[in-house]
Length: 254
Image (cartoon, rainbow, N blue to C red; front, side, top):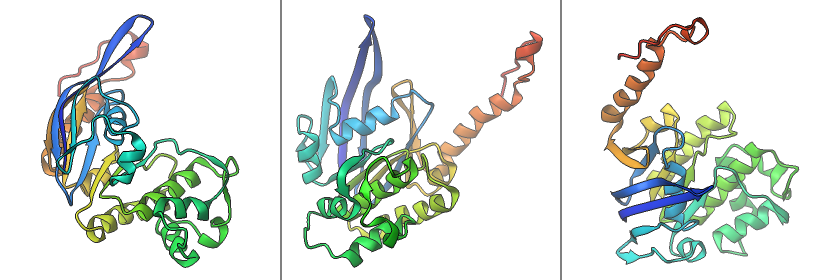
């Protein structure tokens, strides 16, 4: 179980301090798929990076399985069972895909057939990728899928995905949904946290957390949260966008 207690984080640019996360407290239970959603700039990706240990909060505590990991490095958190997939995957010049999967698994004896299963799970033909270098020759979408394959190989107790749909084609996106459902079913007591705007990902969540302006503004299942999101969409649809050009006013009453 993951518990965040009064997490606050700010950044200062040109002498101006902006609060990105504002006193967020929440608990994420084991064995659940939690989706964090909300407007751009609301603090979702920052929250994911704080959980992974990539950035440190200004204040507050992070408790994982009863242990205070607030000051623990990203490497130690990974060893302790927290996996993280970046929104923009990292390239590793000189490292082959097979080597990356071995490192993720922590098993130098990982067989090529097992490595192929992880690649196939994210919609990649293993024969074409297993000996490729993780470098600029791979597209952003290919790198994203390979990174997700490494998270699968880790079988982490908690896996955090920052907008995994970015750069993924429609066929692979459906495959990705199946991967998340498979992780939930087959990795015992694991938790999955996904930062996403995608409706199809929101619909498979056990719980959705709505983050807006650095605050946790709502939480619940899709039946509770989706109407809130659709209500915001209705405001946009009610707005006569031609008024921008005609000098008229927008009726934003929903």
